[in-house]
Length: 621
Image (cartoon, rainbow, N blue to C red; front, side, top):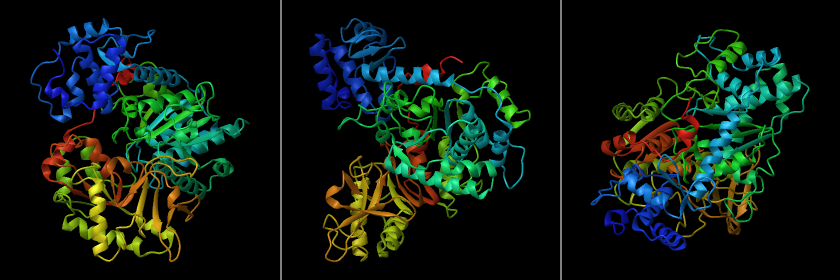
């Protein structure tokens, strides 16, 4: 093979070619098969993969309908050539590339990240607090999860999650929206503070974190609301510790402390860990491999780390699908026999131990999936649709969309570059209340009830085009004025990068307020109920208009009513995770704008990323 063929060139960007050329020159290895491997590896990493599997290198590009016109080098010969290259090494070497024994080619930085995450999670999975809980704490756990509808005999997985988080120093609580992840962790914190009080220890120091500012705000709101619910239960021991439990949440980057403008250098690391005994991280599916490696390094060795998230949602924008790998997505798992026996002690009854339960402890003892949805209910159209999409049942999902039960409906694919009549009418009706309000707090609250979500940012149905079309529609309806100006009254603004000086973070959403004879200001939610911050437009970090937003940007948010605009058929963005994430942003109703072919294509196509992390964590049980 003398160079990259035309069909390979279609997969590449200038960065991929430049990296291959630079490394080849530095390593004095100009062989075409080595250069080709570097180009494809770089292209794969840009698409979110951690490595390139040389046994099936085109698997990383399978959604792009690649049509090879000539073969790639045979895997065995290709790997032999790479192992001979001065650019490729193994563990103790200091080469820019690593080829592992399974035939996975890495950029060394990502290989190090993956190894660090795997080793640290394996170590933390072995840390647990054995022995029974004090009777008072065990009784409090029963009271916290007592259901008004009585005991149905089913295992309460929220209570299981809380007990596992008390025992294990590393715990993952996963489940779809409405399954009670933050409710469970609120109870975990109550139990941890109660446990410290009963044992006459100081209260644990808690850090509440999330990947984005919006997700951090949602975590803080949810924990505050759940603290209030627990307080209303009137449980004496809980009442004693509730005032000490924090609800302030921060972004992971803010907590770690970025150094200057760097996104990969932090003040807190293994040498300078976070000052915390318990670290709770929400929306963990959004955390990429590199950030997870930095976070784990900064967590004190004996601290308790609790991850919350939904492994079926979209993976991180950057490389890796860390939560899915940790949860062994799609494969299922069971606690070990010893974990089931410990849970039986706490429940005070025999539990149904699965026949295939692992004989020894491991990571499987740290992962709890919540099964029951308390938001949608069994008859909810949104719940049925989300479950059909999650499990990849395209026919059942389309049937749920066609049912039009009041919570779920469908509309035709949008015309190119403009709104359909259905979406135009909905935008006028749904956005009118916030635009007619004058109070900033009311505007923010009412705007948060409705959103248009697009599968892509660019293109004829992308969020950029939709925002301009919605602006025109609202202006023609007399709901907006001066839309040719940048800071027109009522413009919704989505922050797209963190700015610690202004205290605005990626995902924060504000509304432009224009008063007579005053400079425009942007209203953002402030600390406390109905509090508002007014920020000068000149101080805003990077931002964009947000009548419509990408589904990726919507992660960590919830809206009463959602419009989902899917990409056109054949788009590599059409995936099950994209559609599932969009649907589960809705609390009351969701409408899907797509034809049957595009919809079913999305349901049937899973997002899978090349990585060695799952094998490292789950390879041997």
